[in-house]
Length: 49
Image (cartoon, rainbow, N blue to C red):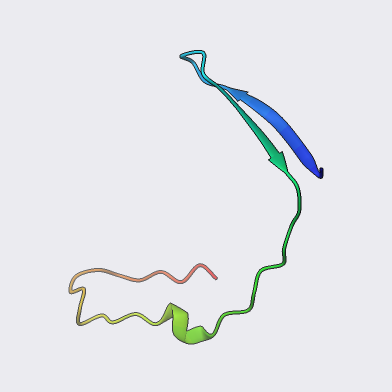
């Protein structure tokens, strides 16, 4: 186990989590971030990459 813990909500519900492994982010092409401004008139895109 890499990490684990317990989260207690205000209503008393407890959630237990365990992180068993990790995986690197897979590379994705820039086409994944394409934006069609004509499909969304009046909406401004801000690129935060």
